[in-house]
Length: 304
Image (cartoon, rainbow, N blue to C red; front, side):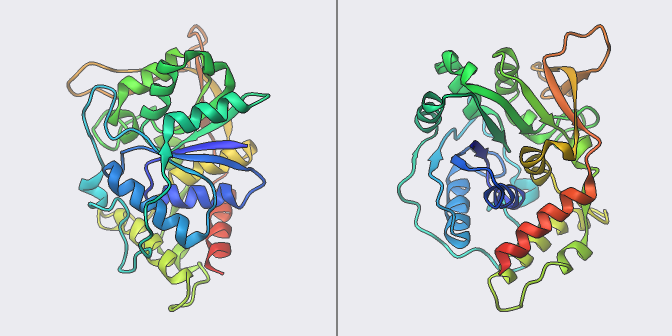
């Protein structure tokens, strides 16, 4: 069983599709601001859940960072956080939404053995939980996080978006003693998809899969509009590792996060020196073809 924390954009949706179709049971999905504001994240999640027939419980979490700022990716993704070539998910009513911290607490307290958390956005919800209930840290086996970077950033020159959006949350998680497994920019950028990937989706123009194909095309178009030939899959890479950790190597490293202002805020510093005291793991050497196949299989299954 696994818990998923997400800021629901297209790659989050695809990641959850992959996990939902695997042998893993999803205990719950908590929502956090990030790709867009929390209200729209909630709407995206209910739309995806209704369209894809998800039944896992949904929980609303943080609408802003630990320090109160709201940094979103709307400049890249638009106000919906989910760009498209035209078609959108049908609207669903946003009802029956629980509290993220209450949902996480109840799940963790119910476990006989520690359980994993797959985090696909800023780590704010997880950090709030660990501050409020540090006794529950031992109930989490590890946090598998798509975020951070061991090289140049994507939101600033130094920082990856999820880390920059709430670096204090990253620091809290690192200090909690829970093992953080970071699926960073460098890992995700080795798993690229272009227009040919979208064309390989078996979706009739008027069927359910046509919306998924348009959303996939809109996601890939983020890269094409910026002169790149392909787009990194990002969150589906983390989902693939959650399903089968043999699709990448998890290397023991020390990770610290820069909290000062200026050009380096939000940078995750990865220390691989033998003398460094390891406090986390980082995913390297992903099996790109295997991960892309897992993602495409999930899309094709949903399209049917």
